[in-house]
Image (cartoon, rainbow, N blue to C red; front, side, top):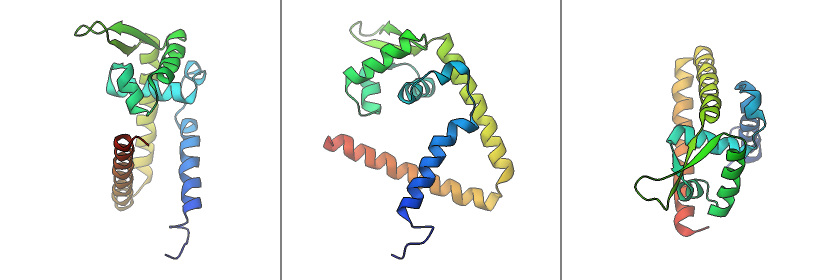
Length: 155
């Protein structure tokens, strides 16, 4: 395959990296959230999007050990973004939920993200949007499939 700007893997990596790195610049969030480490912020968003989670589910979602997830959750709890509750179905299971402070950060992020998407939609032609949406959906499916294969193989 001839490499040009469209198939140059290092250029694609750099573009994706720049997008991720600069994403939070486009979505300003509270000063409180600025104190969070990246993985703490991802966990907060995950719980906000998916609802309360147990440690095993968080560890599985992030391909981390429960002990590593526990360290992150401890830090989030110490900063008052999440709290722990015993499961009503199984008292041995601890459920991680957002606190009011965590919910406020998540709501602010969601509001700012929605505004960013509105700006994007206003500035991208419909034909381009269809192509981009299809491309992102394909990438997302491939990433999810690859992640599932890795989880099953244990690598």
